[in-house]
Every structure is written in C-alpha cells, then in structure tokens.
Image (tube, rainbow, N blue to C red; front, top):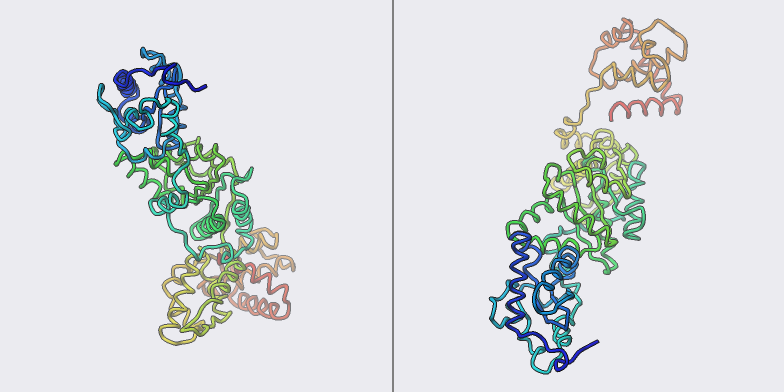
Length: 501
C-alpha cells in the first residue's frame, strides 16, 4: 500500500547517500574488484519506499544475476544501516545503459547520471510519493526496439549467413538424411523436447555448416526469433576482447538475449579452458530459458576428449546426428545439382555425365573439394570457350586427381573380395578349383590388373605362384562375363568402388 510523504517520511538524502556508499564499499571489499566491476558497478539506488530500497540495473540479465547472487547480501547490508530498510527490490531501467555507474561521494547530491542515488530526479521533488519516484525511473521496463538491438548484435559479433546455404540447395542422401531431418525439425519447432541442443558432427566438407546456415535462414524468415550464428573461434576471440575491455557483462548479455545460438566447429575450443567455461555457462543459461542451441563439430561429444566432462555430457543430452562420408550416388546427385546452374555468358554450359561420374569416382574426400573441382572445370570452359570433356577434366584437375590417387594393394583386393564372396583369404592362393572359389579369385585378379600397376607375372605370384597366362585368362573371362551378365557387372563395379573409396 502506498504511503504519502507526510505519513512516512523518507530519510534525509545525505543519510541515504552515505548508507548507499558504505554498502557499495562493503560489497566491493567482499567480492573483489573484478567481480564488483562485472556485476555490481552499474547498480543505482532509485528510492527508499518505507522499509524497501529500490535498486535499478540497466538490463534484465544483470537484474536477474544480481538478484540471484547478491540479493540476500544486499538485504543484510541494508538491514545493518540505521534507516529501517528491511527489503530490497531490484528493477530494470534501460535508460541506465552506458551511464557512469560509480557511486557518488558520500554527502553529495547524486543524480541519475552519477549512477549513485537517483534522488535528484524531478519525480522525487517535494510532495511526490516515494513509490512514484521509483516508478518514474523503472516504468519503461521493456528493452530497446528489438529490431534495432538485433541488427546491432549481429553486426557486432554474429557471423553473416551465406545465402547459398539453404534447405532447398542441400542434396539429401543416405549419409546425411538423418541429420537433415533433425535440422528440419529444429527449424520448424525450435527448442522442441529431445532436440535441444542439436549436435551435428562429421568430417570436413560433408555439409555441417550448410545445415546450420539452413536452420538459421529458415528460423529468421519468420522474423520472430533472434538467431545468432558464429564459429567457435569467433566466440573465443569475442570473449577475449570482452575481458580486455572489461565488458564481459555486455558480452554475456548479448549471448543470453538470443533465441537461437549456433556455434560451428566446437572442436576449436579444445584446450581453451576459460572459453569453455564461458560457453558452459552460456549453454546452461539458454537451455534453462528455453532457447535453442545448435552446435557442430568434427567428432561426437563423447569423442571430443579435450572438452570438459560437464560440457560433453550436456552436449550429448539432446539430439546427436552424424553425417557420414558421401557415397558415390550422393556425390553424383550433388554434382548434377551444381552442374544444372552452370552458365557461360548467359548460355548453359553442358557438363557431360561421363565427367560427373569421373569426378564422383575420383574425388571422394568431401563435398567442398568436389564442388571446387566442378567450379574449376566450369571456369576453365568459361574463360577459354572450350567444351568440358573427360580429357580436359583430367588436364585441368591434374593436381587434385593426383592427390586423390589411392594406391590399392593386391592384398587389400584379395581381402575385400574374399569378404564379399564369403570365402577364406587363403583360398585366393590355394589350388582349389571349385566354382565358388575360382570365380572370386578371377575377380580379384581382374581388379588387381585394373587398380594396380603390378605386372601380370607379379600378380600371378601373389595368387599362389600362378603363371601370367592364368592371370590373362582370368582378366578376359571376367570382362566377358561383365558384358553378358549385368548383375555380375554390378557386383564387380561395387567392389571397385569399395576399393577406390
């Protein structure tokens, strides 16, 4: 219930200022200079309302932190002062942002700009009610315009999104279909139970970043959520900059104000203990507030051995989706999708299917390098006005192809073929001539001739000291069967792909 000044006189301004200065000084001594400057320096005393002291802070985040960590101590310190204060109410006053929050000297008449006692405000003129004085400062509790704040935040520390990386341009195949489905679910319903956090992991260039950008674009399109995407490296550098500039509070506030936080390449934080701790607290604050977190790394949470155990376990408590190495079919699909948009001076550049198949066979490490090879071919055709052929592809991409030439050994061929046909490895060099053994042995000889540079006599020696004519017969026989029997040809081709990848 409100009390008029006549029935509940407030203490003299000088007494209040002196008490507030003592309380701030005690807090500074108790918590230390660093903690005081980070959390308590921006406190401003608004008014004394009967037995209640009203303290203002510039942001909700600071208010909640001070209320939760220092509220009890503030009440105890106020109770120790001879002013009859028994309660402390901590409120938000956004207009305090950027002001000087150091306490005014005792005995002075501080103003709101001084950051000490807001007693000189017009709202506290004689005749005004103390509660009205507080409300005059704390009335605008809403934050600054969200659109403006988001723009500033993204410009300040969040990374820009690549317009090419959307769900529409993502080619789905067996290796990435589960991760794609999880990403879609998070984009449609952020912070859904079981999908928060979403942890995407896989090798380099398999589509993790593409999916993260796709999620961010899809959520941002509705304009109702504040999405922040950044690499783990940028997170670390921004944290270090905040420490140097003594603006860690602003950094924490920025991170905790987003609706969706996305951190790419989390493995970069391995070995950075202080940054890991800051991310850990940010992670907990956002999850507790019902905000969505999406993280990517090159390994699963359990395999990121350089991360703290408490962080690894929290990362694994949501949805963990891996992206496997690409298959030949997925690589072909990706190349076909990219080749459709190829143009040369407004005219379509045709990329022959044979060239796409050649690239899909030869470049198997990651999608990024695959796309780079195709882009180089298209640029070469564009600059020189020449059609893309298999021969020109081998010439233009000679350095990439040489790096991807995989040396397949005869022993590896024998082992893979034996496993495929369910025979013993020793049968490859035995004298047995049963059909279920002889045919796989011929296939292994054929593949040894196709995939290695070994001579026919050397191949024969590796298959139980057989004559080179036996190897020649096996190669020609397998070639004939492949022409006559499509199923057999697919079987041999599958073995070839397995050995080449």
